[in-house]
Length: 412
Image (cartoon, rainbow, N blue to C red; front, side):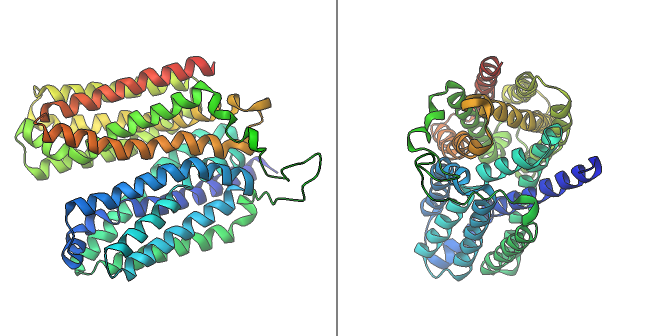
């Protein structure tokens, strides 16, 4: 295979995995914007609406830790297809929903589908993309998630404009089916299937299976728990900022709701731009723990400055952008550090058959953070602690820095 062919194959694999990742993120933000219509049609309140999202993240987080085992046993491509299929079923359940239980079914299916993407995506990228281009691959993976969020919000916005929320579900189904068709078409590039063969004395679990006693052996590695804690901390900070930055910025600086929302939009755009920069940095700089640490310290400094209320109101949006850039830059280096941890923590250094287990467990911290962050910051706001939200975000980011530096020291 020539160098040009390798580059082309890597680019196609990165694009395919990014497409699947974007599909999963469409379903993250498809339902919440539809709540105003759904609450009227089905007669439920904000508590029931919040419960739907709690169910999504609980199922996704719990399922993610176990989905990695399926990835290691049956192959990432198969599991990825199953996940996208569950997403399509979720969209169909949403489009056909006649009551609250059917909405709950749609959320359960979406949570199960979402649980497979990180272990499947990262297993495929690690196995199919050349190591020198993994930094770029992880950057595109993160960007595709942001694109999926944008598509999900757009579909919901169009449905709201038309006054028909069922159309959003139908559109999501069509996107998921397109993703499935593309993944099937590209099977030769993504094929890592591990069919289980007959059990023998020398192969008691069958090809592609994992010995029962060793399935969770990686949990004995302290770095795995440090990585889990890192994702929990950094995602809890993001979830708090995403959920409550608008009222907090408006309360501290007296800016309009539109301006405060523009600040959050700036943060998300800054994060996307930071991922592009971070992919380049990750491909050229090998001290990934220091890269992540410096980027997150910068993000925490922006959050701390905003928390003081001292900067002029006009600087709110630029500072939110700066905080987002710092978080975005950290992403690709963070994923490469997790890859090093996965490789070092598995017997013999041959991590490829077990990437799924490690990535599945470690990245389940994302869902735990998304579930706990809004609850913690919401309780703080209810207690009258509006001034504590941004310092809390900064504190979580600093704790994440300490965790990532500890990971870097242990990884060597």
